[in-house]
Image (cartoon, rainbow, N blue to C red; front, side, top):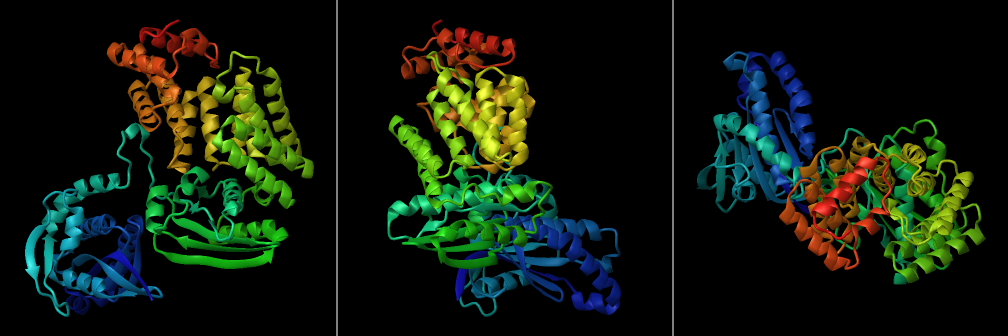
Length: 601
């Protein structure tokens, strides 16, 4: 028996028997039209689930009290507007009750006191109005003003203890509906400025978050194995243009946590969630996977695979196939071949690559050396492994110190050449390798070859339209190549696909805002970046420059002092020597802003 806490909405038609007696066919026709074109869409928009229809009534379940009350208010407002033109005696009116309580789930139906109280509240509502229980009011008060009248504690049928009830009549519902919508639109947004807010409303196309598969093996050291399977699934799904896929950086924040599906749906802006577990023992592997509609809790598909370890790649393909079928995702031209490309069938090579990828993330010198060793070992085992070539190229790229379009004063050309050669080898092995194109684009940017960099970036995006990291890379390249409007578009999409994003995304967003003439928005982005990672030099430099450019001397000088604290040998000349920008005017603005901030030449 499953129990859970839920917001329950109960509604019925006022005077249904009288209406049916006067005009049975007309009443049924209007009620059916309202259900199909107003009520059911509203419940869906507010992330609710219709539990059952009961003649003139309806029962719905919501994961959020705010969503449930918002839906009730919008419902009454829209019905009143639609019915206003008809004869008073024939108008359809509803009573609605909303309660928060514990429910028992049996199949698609729900039971328990939480449901019973919602039904009693509905009976106490005015025609066209909404009644809510005390626990519901406690959660929505202050969000919607004093629109619900306290009707005190009341004894209701079949409930032993009195219930505190709050009600809003039809006039109050009409008055509050506009402000209600404004408040609800803000629910779930991070407490930051509009310039960096993300719209996490559900998209029109299917959307999914793949949560990190749980490591069920006895050895904690096997964590990389379960993480690698998760990442492979995300990478493959990101190639599909008709599916919104949340990035690994965002979904892995739920690692080792108890999962609340509705919370994941709200925080990631997705309808579907894939969960799973991996148990590896000797030459056997057991993988479980489950696909759920996170807005309703309904399970779409689940499977357990007990196979030989060498079949792990086939299992991944089967899981991805089931997702595509369950979500009715259509594969466009060329996506079929790209989607089923697994990269390698050699488990040893795959494990080396995955261990190396973990080292790259840690970014220390020792980890970089270990990553290089592991990638080279993977390529000895499988020299045709395109992704391993890309990752080896990335190690060289970091070695060359040309990351993010900032060149080192040291001679980095040999490592830079090797980075480009590795990416080109990867592309020769797999012409659909999005990561290879992104790597080549960065190499061109470092060499001030802006046309080639933008061309390679667009190809990377076309091959994996949901790859947030490559979108963010492309945004950087567009900003520096004189196409900041395109850069702004791409970084915003990257942030939508990775709602819990790396701090570097804010720096690219700030750059795009500055170059498109939106300095206040740029300041917001850079300030938020500093707030999240105060010891990182880059955003301080960017903020000092733009404040200096705007003539905000005191604030600019404050940032300049922080820059010198973080990097005592900082100089404008040394910093500017490392920048790659197509437009000399962009470089001149950055330099002049730093000078006005009082930084040393």
